[in-house]
Length: 291
View 1 (cartoon, rainbow, N blue to C red):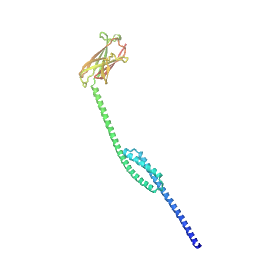
View 2: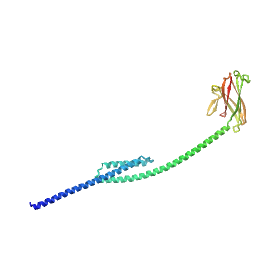
View 3: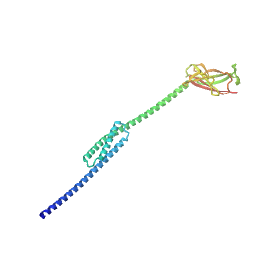
View 4: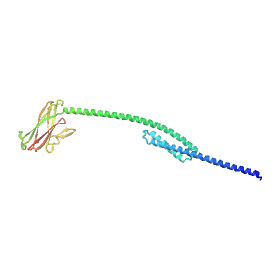
């Protein structure tokens, strides 16, 4: 073969091979750059998804007083988590799916913006309602306090009227008598007690027939003449009495006498006589039997 032909052909082939090698190198370099760019875009997209997931977490931790909105928010949060997991396992070179995930991100963001608007509107409404409720509660407290004051005032007035209309024992004296109804101070001879009492004038008290009940308490705290059949009403219950006496009260000062007979000489010491009428304790008379 003619050298003049072979040598140029070889040179051309060498140049062609060199050009192919160079082009291949350039293609690989460009491909690597494209892959790096795609990896970078995937990384950025993943960061955006992670940021969005964090934002959803923040709204989920809020107290949203709307079950429907809370449910929608939870579903979108799960959707972001699913897309994020898919993005992590998707190859950066899968340009089509990366582009779809990018569009999905834009859609989820738009949905989230709407949810945020609804949450802000709901929170603003709740704050307004909370402020109104606080005002209502304050007004109710003030009204309750006012009513309580009125109730207390009415109760005090009622108590004042009741006290004003109550009978009141004005005075009481004790005379000790023997078996012949004669006065005696000798303890061994005492067989009867005579109580001379005075009920004060009270024109506000209802006039008419009334019953006076007297409870005699001995030095040991026992009720004298205790009998299960001798009871009278007092403060929503019934208590025993020693003696009773009917009298007519006309609103003027009333003078009365009531007796208590003793089967034997009384015990020495301090006694007390409590007087009741119209269901009220109208007075007490303490006395002492001396040796």
